[in-house]
Structures are given as structure tokens and as C-alpha cells.
Length: 102
Image 1 (spheres, rainbow, N blue to C red):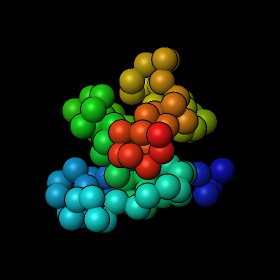
Image 2: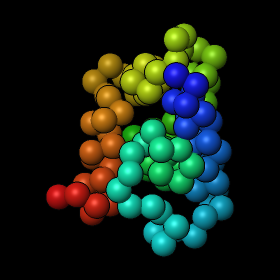
Image 3: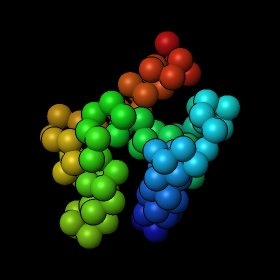
Image 4: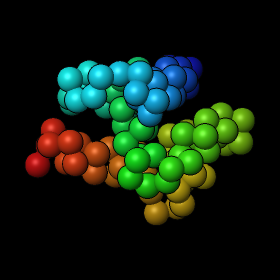
């Protein structure tokens, strides 16, 4: 949906800021929420994927906007990291790593 793609766009912008020290660490990272919420929710999550899975992830993920048709979260992340990954699975791993869930 359009809302999903806008969350991707907004999240990518914030992920680039996070990855380049544009935010101020843990105090700016929102807790809870969902990767589909956009902005800092998505941004910190995508930056975490880059830090933990693939240092070129943001560049690859950004390209999915034109390479994955129709675009979807899982289609995009699988294009970047492989078929074993889902956004829900990565989100859960991220939430555990951040201490937001046990």
C-alpha cells in the first residue's frame, strides 16, 4: 500500500541519519512500535540491520524501491539478505537485542 511505501521512504531517511550520527543514540530511539511505523522506528531498526547483518544494507535496501516489484518489506529484505530473513523475524531479533522484549 501507499502507507507501507511511505513508511519505507521515511524510515530510510532516518536510517541514513542514524547511521551517520544524525541522532543522539539510545535516548532518541523509540521503544516498542513496529518497523512499519516509519521515521525513527524504522530508521533505528534499518540502521541496526546494517550494523549487525550487512554493512552495505542501507544502500541495497534503498535500491529495492526500483528492483522489487511489487515492493514489499519481506521481498526487499530477502533481496538484500537472502530468503531466510523476514522483517518480522528481524524486528523480533532487534527488539530482543535492544532489551525492549525478552
